[in-house]
Amino acid sequence: MSRRRMYSTEEAYAFLASSSGSDSGEELLYLPSSSSSSTDSDEEPPRHRPRPGPSTSPSTNIEPGPSAISEWAPASNFIPNLPEFVATAGIRVDTVGLKEADFFQLFFSEELINLIVEETNRYAEQFIAANLQAYHARPYQWTPTNALELKNFFALLFNMGIVKKPTIRSYWSNDMLYHTPLYRSVMPRNRFEALLKFLHYANNENCPPPSDPNFDRIYKIRPLVNYLNQKFSEVYTPEKEIAVDESLVHFKGRLHFRQYLPNKRARYGVKLYKLCESTTGYTHKFRVYEGKDSKIEPPECPPVLKTTGKIVWDLVHPLLDQGYNIYLDNFYTSVPLLQCLFAKGTVACGTIRRNQRDLPKIFVRQKLKKGESKAVCKDNMMLVKYQDKRDVLVLTTLHPDRSTPVQVRGTTESAPKPVCIQDYNKFMGGVDLSDQALQPYTALRKTKTWYKKLALHLFQITMYNSFVVYKRAGNTCTYLQFQENVIKDFLFGDPEGEESRATGSENRIVPGQHFPAVVPRRESGSRQQKRCRVCSKRGIRKCTIYHCETCPHKPGLCIEDCFKIYHTTYDI
Image 1: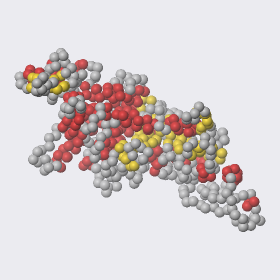
Image 2 (image 1 turned 120 degrees about the vertical axis):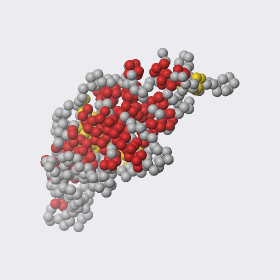
Image 3 (image 1 turned 45 degrees about the vertical axis):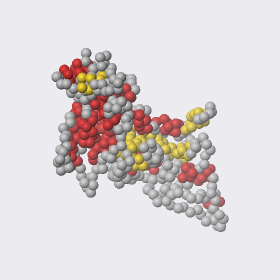
Image 4 (image 1 turned 180 degrees about the vertical axis):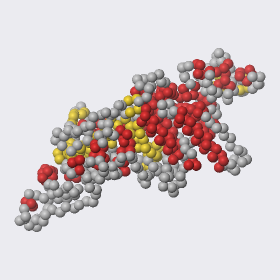
């Protein structure tokens, strides 16, 4: 009996083209030669080792078509059958005459603010009632908040992302290195910390226990997640190219569903699955990872899809049958997912792991020279292998078998590169674009309560989404300028209108360009004091070591209240 031998790539393709024995999903370990096909030969026929796995025909109500029984073949002149893009992309609300703050309030509406006010006041009452004995000697003082105060509170939070200081208390410090009069003039520090302590989005009394089958791990922010997802899809419809990827909110505290992603900057934290517009980074829908044992049941989901496929299906379900182009990374891409998406009028492109099932193993394992590419196809699906620094495998139902020359990095030469890989590099970065825009202005701080940190991150995603809509409406400004105008409007009303300053509420005080400074010492070195200008007009004798350095006559002013009163009432 002669020894069996391994066969070349050309012989393997010739055998695959003439063989029909792999319809059952078996992997061929050896390929027979032409001489071994004779029945008179003494050579033992090649053995097939079946590998357990699902059938190539998905058991779903979506008809997989002939691709379930067809074979991979060389993709010469492969041209996909693309669905027509029928979605009406762009802004779906009237934006005529809206200011920056109005764009933000398309998402951060009065309905959401009232929800936060109600739940915050409820949680404060629950907390004080539960800890009544602890505060018996000194009862905890809590004044119910309102919508205006919470808008000021969130404006200060957003401004903390722009003006960086080491601690929250530093913003109320009188130290010359940290002094910022805005925070003190808007809200006392103790009140800000109390609001931050009791900030809530759901009623704790209605939360089911962990042993309940309906227990929700993100119950504390579930109303916020549902509300923002609804608003993101109502206000704006993304363009044709969209991307699905994960984002990580840094958190190193104790949490059941904390994730470790070494390729992310934060590495540890709460993971978000996001569907973003590729060109702008607009977040159309997101989902919070709740643990590997959480159940994902998206609507109309084919049962053939695994967990990662269900995540994609849940995010893109509202956009199916509209001709969207979806870009995925190798965490999500699989043959069944692309088949099911194509059956629903949606095409996709993504890198794929070489150990995925339903891939031609001989094609995946073959060696290529650097810059070389090969492709095989199966009906409306094409698998491309490209040799760069490493092997790159791309599965697509979107691109033809075509390569165009691109410049090689570090040289003036050009080399052919598959179009699917070029488009993947161009359109896959939607989620990263959103994260990059948020990073310079993040207001997140170290905390033990994960839901407060995640909720603030979601509000900053909302801020960036409103900026994208603002730009789409034809306005021009930077993201920093947009945030500044929103903050000013929340704190002071219209930053251009003096009437809104004079008639605003007690908390909406505009210090303008006036800043308190310590009165310089005398030549002898002793401390110098001035009489408070506001207190003296009220008949109160009070001295202070502070004055307004920017005013010509440098009036003495108390640092607590008189500074803001003077510049909104007495200063002429």
